[in-house]
Length: 367
Image (cartoon, rainbow, N blue to C red; front, top):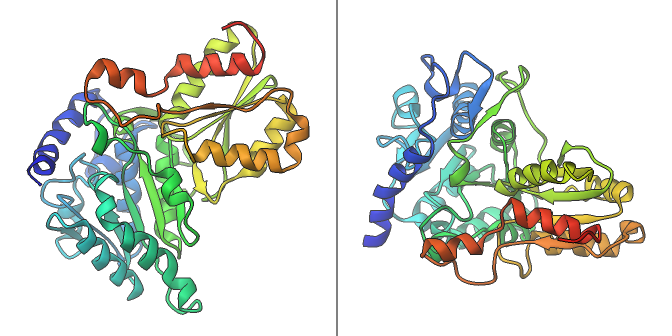
């Protein structure tokens, strides 16, 4: 318990250090509004929650330090001042307790946004998420829906060791009854979080701590209060004809960088941002594989039984298998508990160079 309290105090300092860049003047709504069309991931998430809370009085936020402290990573900054303590609720350190409270509120017709300081701590609430939220609609014969969003940072951060570095995309992606979202860009975060809040089903919304301070361009459409992105639809971030690279969350950035490196050698890589883990948009992946005849799947989680494994299985089982000219390449984290030592940690998670080498193997190029 003491270590968790210490982590809670230190995490915002780490976050501030990573996101110290200037992102433009902020208006009265705080993170939600800017004068130019760029936004950090943190601001996009904040804007999505603010807009949906303005739109629907049944939407509220609950979690550890979400109110008076403005969130451990400042994602809920300013919401308490605007909406008050009835709709932005600080809780004790009891994930099972406040997740259960939020699920009960959803059963009662409200739309909770349940924030976990990290999804590693949501392990304490996994029975509530999987059994209470994920299965009750089915077990009640469709009588009792559970419109709730579970959100917070997922996957590896920096220097937080084995117990605070896991990627839960595959864990929750296996559960019928849950929708699972893993965004990358600021547009992803805003459009998908707004859709998740409006969805009648429980949605597990997996963010990444290292992405919170990253600035992305925002289209005029994305700046609108009515901007939504469909859950279950991937996005082709970069078109290509030689190899398909599929990724989610932070690994999309590494895949885009890898595509730039490959382009210097005349290799045209197509990069697909999954956005959604469940439902999985296998149709977009199949269409791309039919064009490129090669597939690389990149993720930051463990290699065994992961998101990449599921994509491989569905490709092998379906029509796309006949179009493959090389085995599918998987890029994953190492199959070890995450080390604390920085030199070992750097060897544990894939980066741009690893994706480049995997793409070249798929193309039978010398690494």
